[in-house]
Image (cartoon, rainbow, N blue to C red):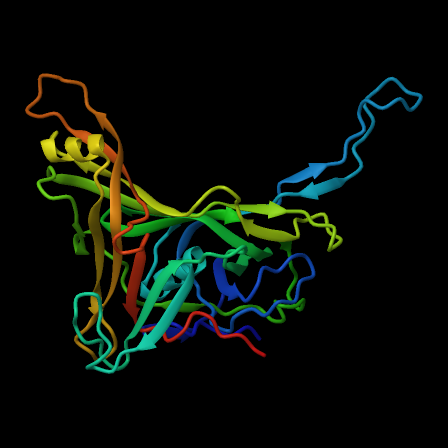
Length: 366
């Protein structure tokens, strides 16, 4: 039996599985076809609008060889697979947000609050029953990967192994936080109930927490900047799939960070007017400290402390602007692209802190 969601205290417990679902857990190391690396017993069921698991099969063709007949020869079945995995419009609750950050960034530490000495980035004591998770980019060869079990409305079950993320993009839609997770996988395939790891039908656990709301996000930005109308942010860390002859498989065998492409945080910020401070920072390549704070509308358990995420970027830069044409209107609006890059003073790229009610994101059996 697959372990239920161990994260949110707001979960209602098991319910009857009828419709589509997505179950996810982190892997200790990327699992290729037939791989047996441990999978975490901490599993999560993020609400998501679309799940894409595409094998991207290339067929083995011999159309143009001379074989005694002047016609295209039939293809010979699968030559290789280049699977990708994408989640579109996830509606994360506090527990799911932490899972996505662990999956994307790959390096984190977790600590329970004690009401006195464990402090959040604002200097407030984190109470008992709340857990602080601090994330940074993983600087290694292999990214953090995850396993996914998905089920369609007509009970088609799918297994995805060795899934890694190249980007995790956040925006607000209809006033609620949504995110898109895009990357690659080592294996995507159908799976039948009774086959490991789907030994029995999964019973999803419903997280009854509310989503994050747009009105609960605050950004600290460049001084004297123009009024902000909209804001998005995305974590980037390109990955690539590798076919190694160490293992026999038509699927890729290894997932590594892409050589020559470094991690960063990026996004767009829409301004209501053209301001001198924004243009000057872009033209001069000025770095400035920026912070994204996203509060949650519910307190953690019986505490008076809500879940909250801080994204600290000490070396932000504006990288591009797109100004509206001058028209017979009251003002001229402008959109800037931005990135968080290395800051030599703090020796940091980005640090993400999340406080929620989830004790752990990865627990592996020996």
